[in-house]
Image (cartoon, rainbow, N blue to C red; front, side, top):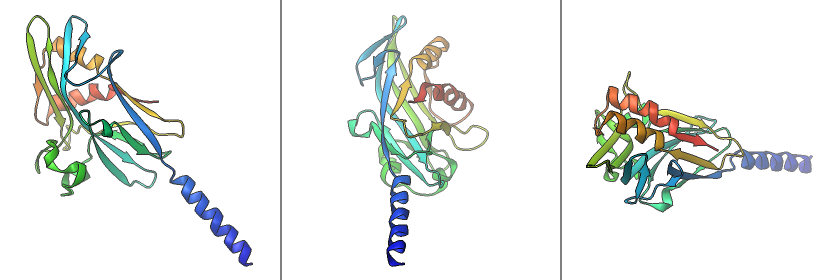
Length: 206
């Protein structure tokens, strides 16, 4: 009987270990076919885009609804990857619970420049730089908001065992923004909400 009990326990822990096995997800940011490097110009149509700052939050929610929030800062190469498990869901930004939890530590620390205030919450996506189309023009997109009806927390997709990359192509986003000459969004509200709906189309799991 003892050996049967040991076998059952061994199988249980093997199953548990397998179910909690994590994979590394590598993040790539492009504008079209060009890799985004901060402070390096990229040609987009008739414009030249230069990104000076790129930061955003990713939230991983496992099959037991436990979540981990990670800040991706494109100036820090070590943040261009996250860990995930099969059947986990990936979201862009921070959910309403995170915004009201009072947890201001680690990646959620306001020292990272991604927190407005207790009332407005976190900046889910920050993109700064300038484009030059015969005249230099600065852009600043600080996208956030967790209150209805203008939430900017967006689902990216579901992990499976073959998921290894998160591809982000900002090309269509810049084309849309430059055409409408929208130089900045700095507060929660309708404009941030509409921007987040376009932005989420730039994210693709592979």
